[in-house]
Image 1 (cartoon, rainbow, N blue to C red):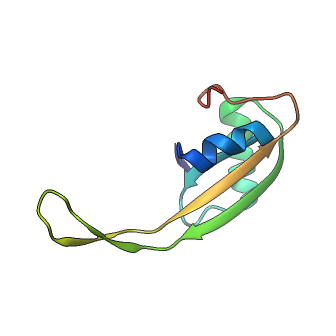
Image 2 (cartoon, rainbow, N blue to C red):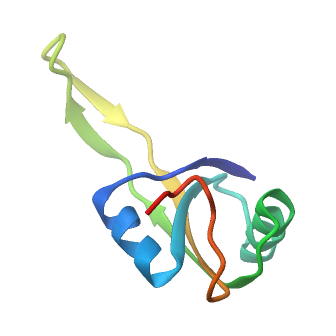
Image 3 (cartoon, rainbow, N blue to C red):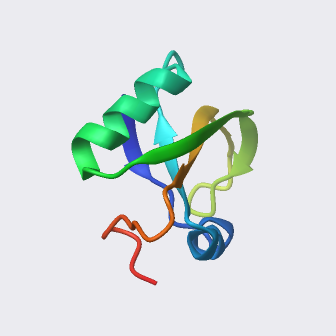
Length: 90
């Protein structure tokens, strides 16, 4: 279900609002994501927002060729106030 946490400027800023970002499988539903977060990190999830990130063309610095970056699905999970996930140290 959960592939990996997302560490970007925007996702780190969202931790101040008690929201945490994860890259998830493309077929994952919001209830499955909520249950996976609850089981893995032992926290209470208030809401789950999902978005599909489109694929895009990137230029490789090493070879100079264009390559396609595959798209993925992102989930932003809001936790109950006062709870944290220790991966996101803020």
